[in-house]
Amino acid sequence: MFCGSSPFDILIRDLWVLLPYTLYSLLRMFVALAISYLYAIPYGVAAASSRRAEKVLMPALDILQSVPILGFFPAAILFFIMIFRESWIGVELAAIFLIFTSQAWNLAFAVYESVSTIPSDLDEASTTLHLKGLSRFRNLILPACIPKLVYNGMMSWAGGWYFLVAAEMITLGSRAYALPGVGRYLAESTYSGDYSGTILGLTFIVLTVLAVDRLLWKPLRTYAEQFRYEYVSLGGAPHPSNLSLSPVMRLRGLLKTPIAIKDVIHPFPVRLGPVVDRLRYVAVKPGKVLGRHVKVMICAVALLGCGLAATRISEVMRYVYLSWAILTEPFWNPELKSEVANIPVALATSVIRLFSAYLLSLAWTLPLAVKIGSDRRMFEASASLIQVLASIPATALFPIIILATISLPGGLQLTSIILTMTGIQWYLLFNLIGGVRSIPSDLIEASEAYRLGGFAKFRKVIIPAILPSLITGSITGLGGGWNALVVSEYVVFGGESIYVLGIGAMIDKAAYELGSFSLLLTTIIVMSATIILMNRLLWRRLYHFVFNRYRIDY
Image 1 (cartoon, rainbow, N blue to C red):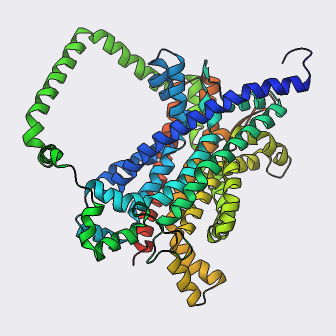
Image 2 (spheres, one colour):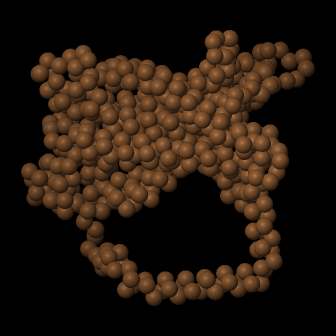
């Protein structure tokens, strides 16, 4: 602040700062979201289309979504900032990468769920019609994924705003990199106690989220309604074009009029025929075409590597020793050794805190999602509000939640659970609303014909239909919860650090106080291993059970 400046002058100055800052943040968000879609669609399709690929890709996705955004700081600094020698390009790429890590995993799980729950008769119809490759993707897979890509895209968009502060202020030990953006402005205002600046920053975020929802997400929500699984088109819905027919209508239409297959499956031009045949031959028999060349290249690379290692063997050994010393530092450094000894108790405390937040989130999101998803008018009226609430960065919520809960029974423990809920509840709500919106209207009509109402309809129709969405929301929500633990167990408030015992607080301490990459890596590995174990023993089994038993088949 300048001496002698009036509050009005300060407000005008901050407005001129926030306008370009908001545009910078908005551009980063859109770039990260586009990259997230380009990553999630092929990843989810590959994982759902092959059992072998699923065994590799889904555990990898479990690992990626379990790593908190702070855990990607070393990778962002090493692969982007250091490669570009700390130029603004490297810092920008690092920020986009960090926003990407808060958006992509949710979308990948959504695509995996959508492809895994395609009704078997549609899958058989696509096989009967000899739909393969791009034709199968265009006529079956992509239409089946569109509703989830829209609803989960809204959640990923909100999640990017939620973690924007961390992406625009990258800190690891003594290294700090800040970018112009509304997240940075919000963090600096909150940490310095300038709550008028915090309110101003939040106002800009809310207005931006509302504008994007009006211009982008609302038209996409209307478009996604055309891709529900239906026997017939809905009476009040606009008649979709050939490209926007639901998977059921498109494939059943092809079965009834097989002559029209050539009009739907666009063949390659004749002049590209030899190229396509050659590519197909290479794909089918790679050994005959590529085997010899691959072997020669592998031998050449191996010889080159051996030569370089032989010429600089002492330097290589030095790097190996330094890497080993850094990674094993928590086990020989007395200061870090005491921190490592607290990991088991901290992990158990965090798990209890996490599941408490999960159950509390599920208790209010499930009935609300059923209510909102079942009423189109209510859904349209509340969609923007939900987006705004889910987009408020965690840092901005700290003062409000802490002041409201710190004096209640449970004190800081209750505060931490409520802050953790902010990272779980929106994943659950968006996934559950998407599941309710995807229930075929003929199922609803059948339940009404049999006069099922109230709890009976909820138990026999709605819950079985949305169970896949509930599992997806639980996995992604708990992943967001682990991220939220990092910002809810270690809070900077009023210039002081407030923290509770937990694995998230240990990650913060390793990154911000000690600047120890080795302790940071150790705690993240422990957290990731715990999440993977939980997913493999519980959620993955529930995934397959629910998908096999409660998928929609006609």
